[in-house]
Amino acid sequence: MSNHKVLISAYSLACLLLSGCGSLLPHATQTNDLPWSSYEQAQQAFESITPEKTTLADLQMLGIRPESTPNVLLLNHADVVRRLAVTSNIDMLLLAPPVQRCLAALASCHAYEIEQKHINRQRHGNFLMDFLNFRRQTNISGWQFNALIIMQDDLVAYKLWSGKPHFLQQEEERTPLGPLQGLGSSILQR
Image: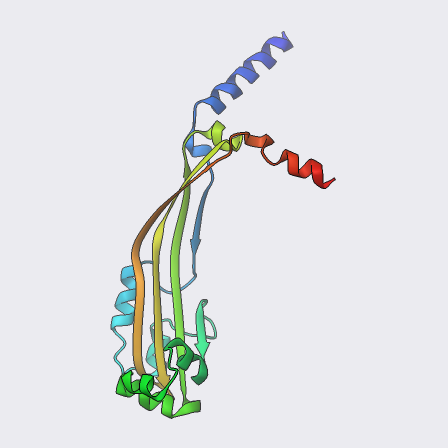
């Protein structure tokens, strides 16, 4: 009778594996722990920043605190020059006047570079094909918001932003030999 239970268990497991149950496939989410949970919130916070009026204290109230907020990069004067690709005096004249004044102030000019993103990775397809490494399909979706806030002393001098309100990417990996694909190289390394 125990053979009968083993057969039923094996049959049940095989049915589960062959059913293509997508809920058994891995799912991952990558987020930055910043004060905004969506692209729209990040953009609204950025739009509330007014050059030559918003102060360092105002930025902190918006959740932009370089010492405690992840993914806020502090840039010194030289970093700002590199970010803006200023290579000559002619390039300097093409910049907005507040940026020119800030860069001329040297040590009192600095910036915050902010990168916020939220990425979902959802595998889909046949569980057995994925599990045995024959075919893996992944949908990658999310959003990304980047900003550069140039400061002169404790006052915002200028701001720039870019981003992707929504992105979708599909990846597919095919391995014809499945779990045996990497076996040859691992044997040769021994």
